[in-house]
Image (tube, rainbow, N blue to C red; front, side):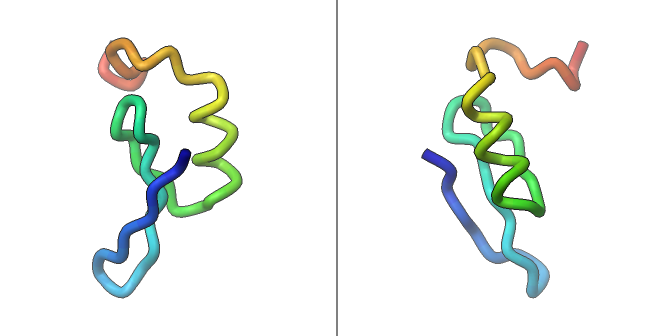
Length: 44
């Protein structure tokens, strides 16, 4: 389930599996559905 938080007057959506944050809820939900919760691909 995507977690929401407010930072800098914006709402951010966080993947509970890996912690990656998105500014769009649909993007976060789509990511979380495909997230394998290992090291995030953006660090590779």
